[in-house]
Length: 75
Image 1 (cartoon, rainbow, N blue to C red):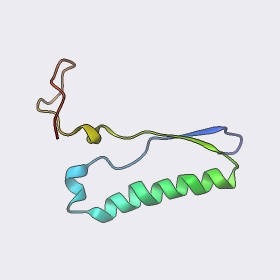
Image 2 (image 1 turned 120 degrees about the vertical axis):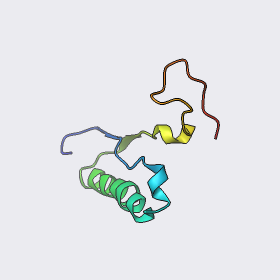
Image 3 (image 1 turned 90 degrees about the vertical axis):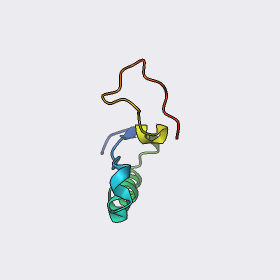
Image 4 (image 1 turned 90 degrees about the horizontal axis):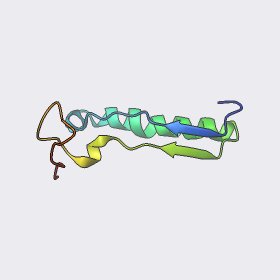
């Protein structure tokens, strides 16, 4: 990360169905992974991060593969 002004953090586990059975996977990939990114930013003096959420926040699509005109899922 040396010489960077920004970090785009888009990594993480998005398999929410498996999370119930393997919560340590989320802890390792999402929480500890993000901690590693932040610690590396601090070590390199980087002050800005863009954090992207996943599509999981919208719920499960009723149609797979999901066409553009599919209704918005309701949780």
